[in-house]
Length: 167
Length: 213
Image (tube, rainbow over the protein chains, first blue to last red):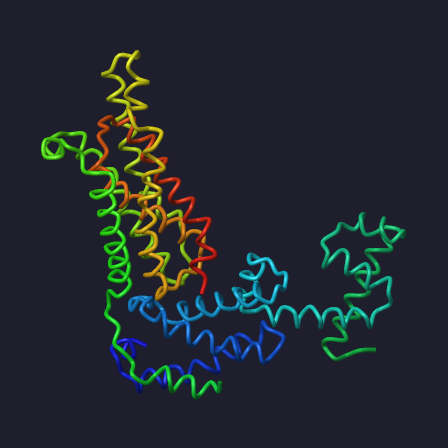
């Protein structure tokens, strides 16, 4: 980027080409429509070109690049009138593990489906939603010890399934 | 358009960018706008008749200290908000230091003045028009900054608008000092600050619409 700022067309061309897959990955992860994602890649490249003087040579390049990409994305959401709070969006964009986290959540859901519903419910309320045993017992209308036993048996069954030693 | 074609067209006829391009661009915008405002002050309002004598007195330099230091601080903030990376605005608290210094001067001034004259020095002769004149004079400078921002990349549009408004208000107030005959610190702290506040608020209100990209 620095040699591009000094006027080297070859370095600039190489840099922009290298940025395309990065930006494509970034936008495809957050925008449903792939044509929109490609538009955003082009808009980001154009914006960074017009506003390239704002790159501070002493600072990191990727922070600058993704600040522009993020701005373009928020702008896109605003234009397409999708309701999405920008605060929440920032959170989503900042957490690189967002995709991994959502995959993990889906895995947990799938595993819990394999258990009897009483055990699944007990595990969900005490271990995922964070309720106490007493609250879980009250909402499921069963005894406290029943909840504890269900959680214990359910977790044991899940562990066995994950470790590949299902009975 | 194909992305590869776009990249090729962006990379041809590439003009080098200087290391201080952001600062130069902001300075150019401020200077252009300030020349227009200076014309308005000198041609429209008229310079104060006793300007040569005022230049050797304390009140004039107190006013310039206040407006110029506010302008300098606001420019630093504008330059930072012109870059896209996230900003911690709290680190810019020293911007309020001139206000604190002025408050001390006001306290000293009031302590040395009989209570019966407080209202008189506080309102001066021009308190009704002063803030609005500063707001009006800041418009050309704000326009100059808007031009500068076309090549810059603010991502916090409301904050960038407010900072640009404050900077243009403070520059306008600096030039307005060439006309304004008021001499008291209490007047300056109240009505000039109100003018700067109006300019900053106006900037924040239009920032989202005019600075978007």
